[in-house]
Length: 227
Image (cartoon, rainbow, N blue to C red):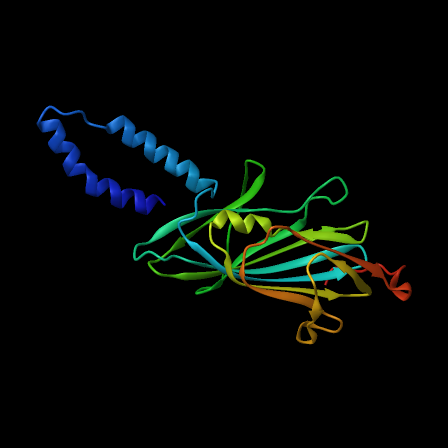
């Protein structure tokens, strides 16, 4: 957003100087205040300049935890370069602790790690887009699930003000059997043995994805090391 603000301010400066020459009021303080407000909105990711057309989520389900891998695509629809701030919503409650081993990386057009910060109760990051550029990001995290259930947050998609063009969601069980999901599931053998999932187009989710599993008796006492 900083580059967009600079573009606007550069265009407005001659007009402000003309007002000053004619004895008008220079709106310097107002402009500074507006720029500061825009900067805060950008930093916390409240207003999206870029678009969020699709995501692909895989949840590997183990007896006592889940490992989530999300692929997210963002697009700058403008012909100008922009920088967009993002926040990462993570599921946590009295039973489910905050996820751990969080990692974030850009997968296209270049492959590189993305640094994150923690501010106002959320992990945050920003991306610099060229004009009309698409960037694909991968997020990974692990969460302990003592009651054999978990949640993936979908409802924050509504903050983008447009539905997802496409969303793909998969559960891959490891020593467990999926027994419940608030979204209807179908077999997804390409994702792994016993994998289940669902897909949506023009997706405007009104509820998060909740699912639960049972531990296979033969696996109940095994200690699953992180793969």
